[in-house]
Image (cartoon, rainbow, N blue to C red; front, side):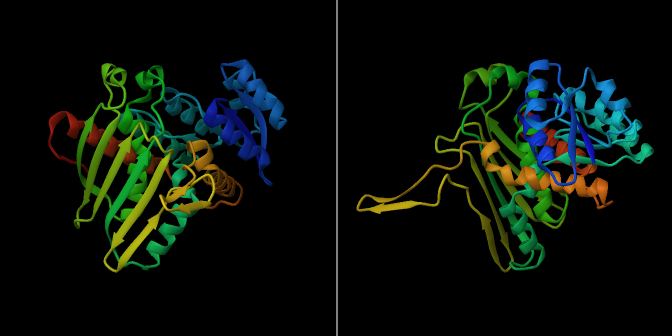
Length: 329
């Protein structure tokens, strides 16, 4: 399976290496507006450098594209690739507008294109195992899902300005995970947020600290805690409390070594950031995409998953603005 990469930034490099190392896929060509970035990853993986996006879209030998460009280009590129008959893997979100996402998904449906959205946390070995054991009924039906997701530090304000904000950029992963684990669609969203980490983030209209509660029709609950600051490393934890017990996935630390003295117990810090924390998840994600294209296996997360997570993020933004719960569905 010959693959074209659009966007050779930080996340594009991750997917490029996963595709290049895959037994069935081949990273054939790379494009980025930054020719130096494209050239670097092309040299590392043995791919060629495309002169422009049309070169990749028009190449009949390219069966699939990986879209890792800025968010405001995603929907247009998905549509171009779908019309060109290519399978598409696109980083989240599809767009910052739910209406634009709906229009994009209509093109995907009309062209019968294969589309997968990059919610990589579903593929984390610990989280995926938790999901399987939950579905196996080990702790009964889920009642409360708790998700903690905190970055070691905030991104540059220049990024914040164009990211879509904490809810649509950062928490959208957790909103997808909440849907993934609840087993039912949330119908009510309540959110509170503040700017406690960096005043500059508030000055550009965003928040850096937030708590969201989701409720399904049957009353199942999910609570999500986000912060742009965690002094102890990248904080990623999940707990599902069910009618028959509890399942929990802990943070991953640099090592499992623990020291015990009269002063207490000490362990190494949590892994520093998502690149280290989700290395295995990115590989498993690429495996799923390649199998979906080459073997006809279902691709998930779908474009519809991307839309539903965005709708929840929009509802959280509205809840913060109004101070009221927001109905969705």
